[in-house]
Amino acid sequence: MTQPACAANPDLWFATLPHLMHEAARICQTCPLLDACAAYIAEHPTPHGVWAGKLPSQRPTPDHIREPAPCGTTSGYARHRRDGEGPCQACRAAHSAYHRRYDRQHPDRRKA
Ligand code: SF4
Ligand SMILES: [Zn+2]
Image 1 (cartoon, rainbow, N blue to C red):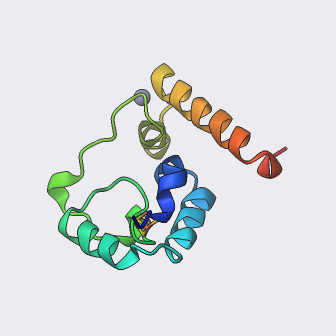
Image 2: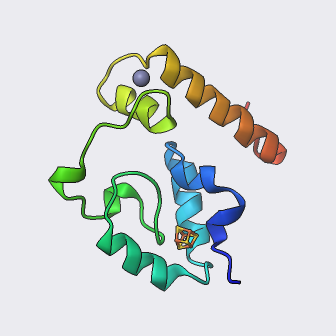
């Protein structure tokens, strides 16, 4: 069966840091399911994640699905930051867990 390129590391496609989102979008260009994925996301718009090589900011997002990202997720963390407030405990935990996981999987990209 054809595997989507995002299957090996789905978290990267829901990253909130811009350079990680752009990396996911770049890998999408090599995905065998790119066309099917683009058709799917056009039918099922969501404000979360990179889909078919497009960041959320590069996709049309109908107002009715613009629900706030839940707390305890990296998207929730990003929402707090966007709203100019300190992330809550649950969102901070989700954010650092995400980074620990990413650093483990990409020891070569560890930042100073
Ligand atoms: S094109 Fe779609 S299925 Fe393929 S890697 Fe990107 S998000 Fe995943
Ligand atoms: Zn929160």
